[in-house]
Length: 301
Image 1 (cartoon, one colour):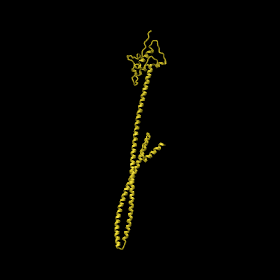
Image 2 (cartoon, one colour):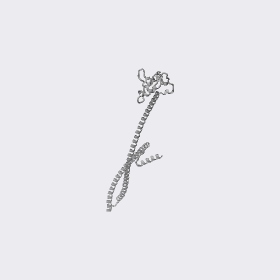
Image 3 (cartoon, helix red, strand yellow):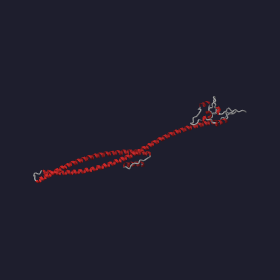
Image 4 (cartoon, rainbow, N blue to C red):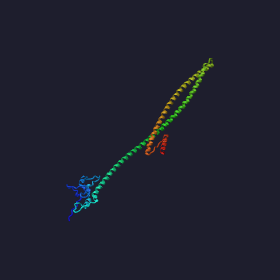
């Protein structure tokens, strides 16, 4: 009895030109199997499926060919393939499903890789922003230290100026008291001179008294000259005191402005350090002590 030789998928996939349709071979398409795609759908399917690796359609599957050779076909004489649900899960269909799964896994891997690159770029940006914030906090700390040093130096200079002004005030008070005593002496001498001038009798005693009066008048003139000089010195000292007082007021106003600016910059630096989870090391000045107490109260609250 003569049997027809079963045709392999490679032989069935040959076209009229004699070329082998490798895509049909790789998919394991059988034209005579129930549930296989019709010829119109087969023409629409691509010849190769891009998977990112070597195209499986370009490599013949010998095991598939052997399996196909072992299965009966419609060309076998007197043999009919039973219509069972297992016909849908032929090796060709299973291979097509595996290719689809590989493609979906590759697309998912690509999406995950893109998401990973996006997350890495976002992490680099956050790291850069964090480093910029740390640099700014360090700059603020340095500025605060410089401000503290400048304020300490300005405070010491103001203390020295206050001591000098106090010494000038004491000296001015002493010279003012000396001027008052000189004025009292001059008045007494003037009264005595008037009394001597009103004397009607001129005697030797009176002449001596007159000479003494003249001498006293000269002395009084000298005292008046000394008083005038002392008054000029007192006026000059008062003018210097007023200028020093104006300078002290101006420096005190400047110190207040610097203290207010320092408190504002310190509060901003403390806020930035609190956001970053750090702390500021401040110099032990009264203003820094007050700021430290405020920070401690806020932390305990």
